[in-house]
Length: 225
Image (cartoon, rainbow, N blue to C red; front, side):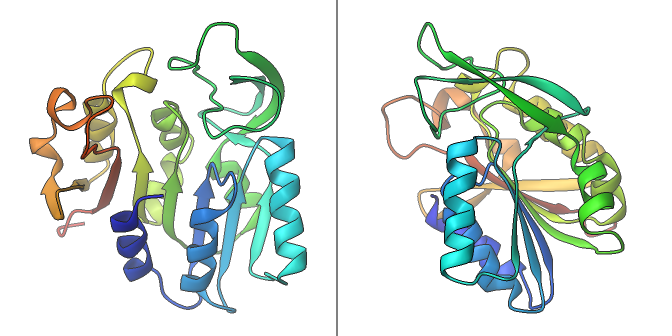
């Protein structure tokens, strides 16, 4: 987890908000999101890996997190079914629909796929999405394409991970451009500062094995929107 991202996310959330955690895995961000939205709010935590989703359900039951719903589905640009790739048996934070940075011979797991727009219409009709967190291991653009209506109508704040090494096609800047086209402006955290994404360069800010390493980005609607 990214401490700067957690602090930013917590500052954006208010009691009663609806927040979405795409790629919840072990619930590190879900925990802080549920605190931010309070008892009157709600968190939808999307996790396609059955082992991780089962663990999250046990957390929800054990700690009586009544404001958290676990949704065992992968989000993308269209509904259906696909193969989730993992480096081995069992759940992994590296699980990906892309698999660009996985070692040779990944294990495939059939998973259900849906769009955020469809899921919100079914699971939270009439609610306004306040914050969207996305960790999709290279599938971020497809997640945002499947959330087109929510991004245009609800204008949520967005916290997402994006890394050049996870992408099979396109660049991190392509994801930025898509969000900019929807009226968003973005920043990233670097050496304790918040920096405009116009200054992002993967050759400088995403060098494998070197710290600091910038892979979390925050986008908010432009002031004129």
